Length: 357
Image 1 (tube, helix red, strand yellow):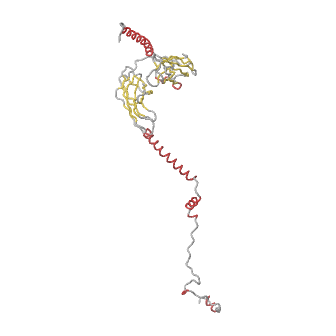
Image 2: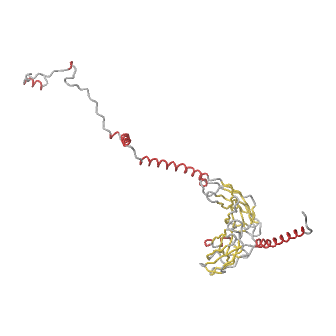
Image 3: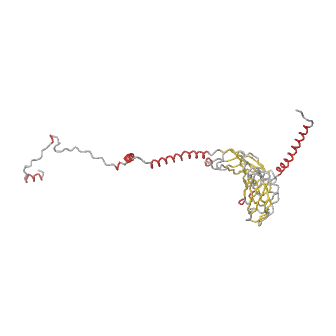
């Protein structure tokens, strides 16, 4: 095949130009996706108790479950001091983002248990942790300055964690498995840690952990250590391999595997139910059919004769006694009747007879 001079260089130049155009189109999109952080906007910056505001957001993970709370003693810079204990949890709302990571939800205004400054706290419930705090003022709610920031203590796990506890008989029949997560922490900071709030996460298989807050009552002085026990509970009927995680703040301190046995009592119950119920239904059905089906007349009479009680039957006739008549008696014992012309007995004979003579 004949090639013209310069044709190869023109083809290469065209390919380079096409690649440059594609990169120019894709690069801004990728940069926008990387820099698109979660955001929250409020329809009102201030409202009183009993009112309602609309919370909108964007840049979140697609189809993520979010939690919306009004919290006191909080700022976007320092977060929610005291955790969700400073929030109006009873009036919170949950929302799921769409495929683009956006949402819109109405939130009732409630007074948090702590004084303002307040925020609308939006955080993910499952999966990768993400949160945003938007400044909000609850009209008429008390306000107080935040405590000055101090050199917070730093907790670290000093020994291997373990799970304590045994399964009961009810767990064998599907009750929620429960254990105690035991670990030892040390305060590596210069300030005491009072009533620390930990988070316990339970994950099954490849799913993300489900986090729950657990507060420990006590104080860990600087340079000292403490042995802590926190309850861990799974859902009813849970079985398989689970992973229990311990988190303090934003740092995961420890992870502990937990193998939960299958509740065989539930399986046994269903097996017995599948065997006993059909057998009972069959017996009841056969009894009903036996009572309602028609029978021939002869079979009914014979059946009634068989079921008649002995008291209802006629008593048997007594056996005949071996009495003999005058003509049928044997000759040796046969006697003749007295003659009719026999003279009557005398008076003396009668008297003798009466006197036994």
